Image (tube, rainbow over all chains, first blue to last red; front, side):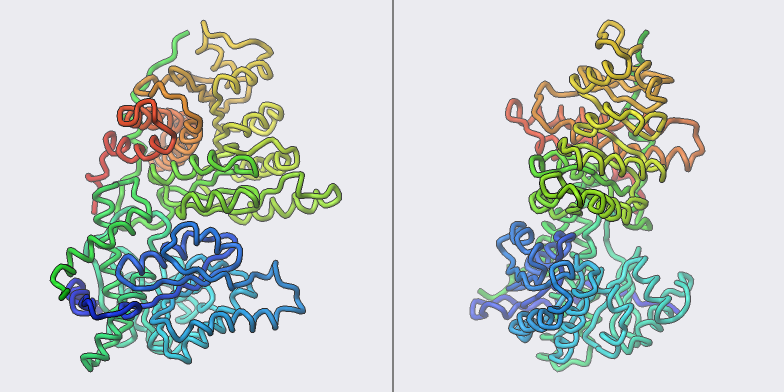
Length: 320
Length: 320
C-alpha cells in the first residue's frame, strides 16, 4: 500500500486565515500546552512559543508550581499557569481534594481554547498523570482538539480509552513512541516494509484518531486514508523539534477546523492540521539548518517559523 | 623530548559523523554535565550548551536544587535535573539515605549517556563531592567516558583511585590544577623545560588516563604518546573558556569512540577527542576575538562554535 504525498504548502495556504484589521484578539487561535514539571521546562516552552510564532493569538502553559517561574522567564509572551502538582508535594490524604482543585483551575479556562497540546515535558509522575487524564476527559467532552506528544503518549498508550474514538485527537509519536504504541495496540512489531498499512491499521484500531508518525517522511493517518509529507527537513536531530511540531499542529488544526466549518467541507481537520504542521516544521528546520548547520538548536528553528510561513503564504497580501 | 603537533582539523573531519535524514534523535551524542551548585551556575551551562552547539543531540545537567532554576532559565535547550544536594540542606543522620537517593536519580539516566563532564561549577562541598565520587564509580563500571575539569579535578587529585587506570577518563587541568596534580602524583614541581616528558609521566603514573594540559599550546598525553595543539587561539582569558573545552572534548570523544568502533581502529578515543576538542575551542575563541576583541566573553565564543566547525567540516556535503 502506498501513501499519498500531499501538496502541503497548498493546504497551508488554504487554511491560514486572512489577516484583517477588523479581527480581534483570539480569533487566530488560543492554544494551551499541558506540560512542564520540576524536571522539564524547555519542551512546553518550545511548543507554546511555536504556536505564537506561527500566528496564534494566545498561548498558555499549564505546568507545575516549580516549572512555572522558569517557563515564564523564557518569554513574557506566554501565559503560564502554575497549577499542576506532583506526588512529592501532595500528602496521600490530600490527593483527592488537590486533584479536584487542579481540575477546577484548568476548567476555568478550558472552553476558551481552540486546541490543547498534552505532553511536552509533562514527566511521568502518577498523580500528575491522573490529573491530566481527567483534563483530557473534560477537553473531549467539550470537543476541544488535543495534540498528544512526549509523556502524553506514555499516558495514552497505557490508557487508550482516553483518546479511543475521539476524532479530534492527534498522536505524534517518534520512533520509540511509535514502537510502544504498535506493540500495545496491534500486539505486533513495527513493520517498515508496509509502514503505510500499519499506520492505517493503528489509527483505525484506536477508533479514528489521527496518527502523525514522525520519520524520514512523516506519515499521517486517521484510519481512512494515509498521507505523507516528505518535503524539506533537516538532518539535525537535536531534542525539542517534536515540541515545535506539536505546537505547529495545534495551530493548523484549529485553523483547519475554522476553515472546514466556514466552507462547510467534509474533511478531517486533524489530518489537515497534521499535514500543515508537519510541513511547517520541516520547512523551518530546513531553513534553520541552512543557516546554522550542525550548530542548529531548537530555538533557531523556532526563529525560522515566521519566514517559512511567509514564504508559503505571504501576509502582505492580506487586507489591511 | 618533543611533542608532535597534530593535524587537528583533519582529525575533526574524520570523526565528525555524517548527517543523514535517516538518523534519529540521540545518535549524534547524548552528553551530561555533573555540576552546578548554589554558588556556580554559569560553568555547567557553558559546558552543556557548547556540546549542543557542536552537534550533540541532547545535553543534560545534573546540579543542586538551588542551581537548577537558574541554569534552566539560561536556555530551554538543556535538560536540567535538580538532584544533587549540598551539606547545608542535609542533616547528618539523613546523609546516607539522601546519598543513595541522589545516586538513584542519576543512575536512572546514566546508561543513556555517551559521555559525562564532571566538575564545571561543582563546588567543593564534602557531601556533594562524596556523591559525585560514587557517580564516577558507576559511570566507570558502565564504561562511560568522563571528562574532568574544575572542581572535579580538585576531587580526583585528592582521590586518584577514582580515575586511575581508566582509559576513558580525560583530565583538563589549567596552570594551577596542573601544578597540584604534578605535586600530588609525581611529588615534584612543574617542569616547563621538559613539559612533554612530564605530562607523559603524569598520564602514565595515573594508569593511562588522558591529560589535556591547557596552555599556550595544549599538550595531550595518555602515557604512550604526547600530542600538541597550537593552532589558533585568543589572547583573551575570560573565565568560562575551560567549560567550553570540556563540553567540546565530551562531544568529540563520543564521536571518536563511535568512529573507532565502526572502523575497527586501534586508537585512543580519549586522545583523539581531546585533540579535536582543543582545536575546536581554539578556533572558536580566535574567531570570537576577531569580532569582539577585548570585549570577548565566553558566550561570544560559544556563538562561534558552529561557524568554526562548519569551516573545518562543512555539513553541506552531508546526504539529505
